[in-house]
Image (cartoon, rainbow, N blue to C red; front, side, top):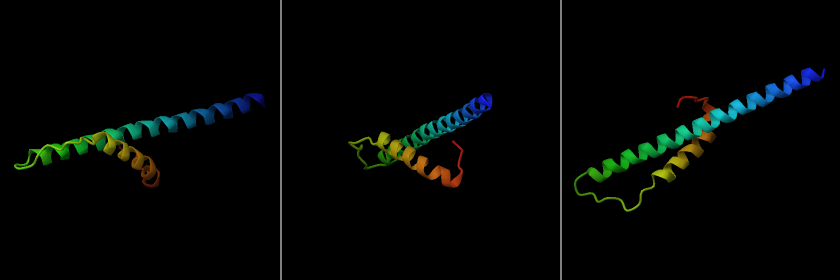
Length: 82
């Protein structure tokens, strides 16, 4: 009986760890995608004739928001794609 409890505990621990790893990986992916897309859009806007360089680079903020929204929205749509 004691071995069964240890086996169940290890199984739960491993399944929880796997979910945490996927969540962290997905959040990292969402951050990189959000920051990269914002960087591309900003450079495109700045390269247009007559546009000045933006004084503020907010790629990191956009990346953080993308990671937060991805964490919230991903479970509802079962989106595991990175």
